[in-house]
Image 1 (cartoon, helix red, strand yellow):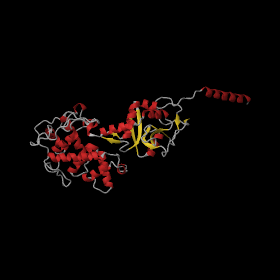
Image 2: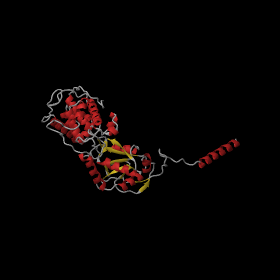
Image 3: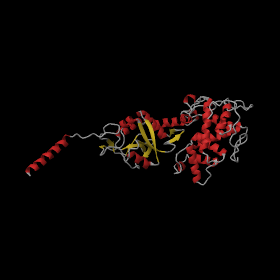
Image 4: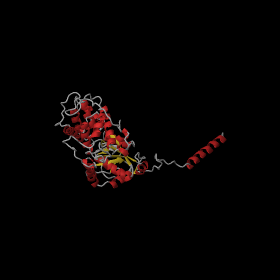
Length: 419
């Protein structure tokens, strides 16, 4: 019995020695860098606090981790001054500022849209984002936040990172200078203006007396059947897009006569090496216009459907669907351009772009409405008419135009870019 007790004592001593010799295993991030104790300043009440040791490891990625990952995740809400989609590019003051910061630290920027402040804070605390790039009220916002970075109004509001992420906060504070706001606002105004499109402005009429609109009339006539639209309407759209300059290019990357975006070109199978070639560009645009009209097959009237497609060419068919959803919700005809035109304009108002039926947020509706209006006015000029009105019935497209779907002419040429 004594021997057995002696053996138990030896075994216990052996276990204690083994535990003492074993070195604690260091915790690593998913990218292999050690997780150390992070210091933070507890200023959630809006005042500068003393630095303290974090009681637990922060879920936020440090600056080093973000740079190793190559991506900064911006948490934001949709809106004209925060973030919105503009011709497949991010826009909005806060987005453009965050993009500049991402460039400064050498990473790409990814946007995570949230419905409200509570969701932004929740995602930040869960490690689903790196920075809340929306000015939050420092004294009212609750959550495990460390305010830093952009301060648009003398410290009343500020961006935020997760409390404990001192390396990212310090870098944001060192990067931000108040003059950046005015600089980015000026850049945004330029990007949203027509001056951002590099193009030569040609006359809207090459020879009015002979009815020659442009040197590309033969292309509009050739591909109008594919586009399901009057060739003069296609010419009017082209003038609105590029002023008949085949070398036109916008800051967003839209190219050629019909300002085809690189993503759209890839979708349509148009090589970038050919995007400035007039016939290839017009042929691709014709196919895209037909595709957009197909998105609105529920709009029975061809004239109305064509207007929806024109608006989609400029503003994106998903935004037009949002306007239709609003019209339907308010008991109005979602298939009438006059109705939808009004709701497109309303998509720039918070009451409407935050409505639950709206899936794609804020839209610069004035730009899209003006786009369609100007094309229609020029189409009337090209067709020898004083204008076009909503009073047209059936499939008629207006004076000087075709009726219903265009009848394909008998062609005696080889259609190089037949789609």
